[in-house]
Image (cartoon, rainbow, N blue to C red; front, side, top):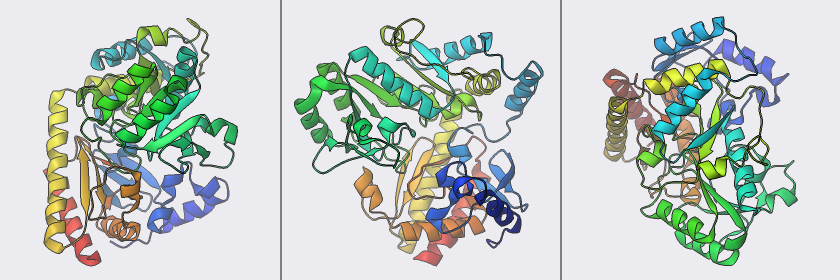
Length: 429
C-alpha cells in the first residue's frame, strides 16, 4: 500500500478553501507527520475506511470514545429508535436522568452532575464553578495537560518553577491568562512551593489524572495524593479532567485505579458513545451552586441531547468488568510486543501504557512530564507513522497524542499491528 490517495487529496484541497487549515480540529491536519489527512468514509469494529477505499486498523478510535468499536450494533439500533422520536426538544427527558444515575453509580465522587455538549464546555464550566464556590480566582494547571480551548486554560508556563501563565494563543488576553498558574506534571515539589506562596488565593487545581495530551503519561506514585492533600489543606478544589480517562481506564475512570477522590470530575468522549457530550459533577454542596439552584450560571441549548444521551447510556450499560479485563490484556500484549521488537532492532523507544491507552515515544529516557515528552524524536515518529499507515495501521498523527484500543481489537489485529511495527522499526533504525 502506498500513500497516494487522490480522493482524500481532492477533498482536502477543497476544504482548505472553506475551512481553516482544511480541518475542524487542528491535529487532524497531519502536519506533524508531513502529510495531508485521510478523509474517512466509514468505520466498523476496529477498522476505518477512507474515501479512496482503503481500510486501516484504527488506534485513534475517534480520539477515545469508540471503546466498543465503531458502529456497535446495539448503539446504532438505539440511535435509530431515538431519532424516530425526534432529535432535540430543548426540554428535560427521562433519558438525561437515566444517564445521570448511571454515571453517579459508576463514579463515587460524583453526587450530582450537569450534562453539556463537549469536554471543553465541561472543564470551563467546572472552573467557573470552582471559582464561584471558593470566591477565589487563581487556577493551577500542569504543563502538557490539555483541558480544552477555554481562554483560562490555553496557558503555558513562564520562567521559574511556577509562575503566572502567559497566553499560549493569540486572542487570549494576558489579563485572563494571569489568573492561571502552570507547573510541570508530576512535580510535587513545585506544586508545594506554589501553595506555600499563593495557596489562599487558589480556587482549584485541574489535572488529567493520567495525561493523554502530551502522549500517555502516568502519575508518579504519590503525585495525585499530594494534589489531594494540598488542595484540602488550603481550601482549594481538586478537579479531575477525566474527559479522556473516564470510563476508559475503568468504569470509575482513573478514580477506579488511583485511590484519590476529587471534588469535581469532568467527563466527555465515552459518555457520549461517539456523539458530542460532556458532563461535570462532584460533591452535592458544590454542584448546588449552579443555576438555577445557585448563583453560578451555566447553560446549553443542546445539553442532554436525546441522541447523544441515548448513545452514551447504551455504551455505558455495555461496559462491565470483563470489557476492561479484555482491553487491558490486549493493550499489554501490543505494548510488550512493541517493546520487544524495538529492543531486538535497537530502536530507542519508551512505551507508556495506562489501561487501553498507550503512546510509543521515540526516546531512550522515561517520559514523565512535558519536558521529557518533548525530548522525543518527532522526525522518527513521523517516519514510523507513515510506514504504519502504508501497512494499514491508523495511529494518532502526532507524537504527543495517546492511542486507544477498543474491544474489537482482537489477537488478529494485534498480530497485524506488530508485523507492521517490525517493518516500520526495521526501516527507521
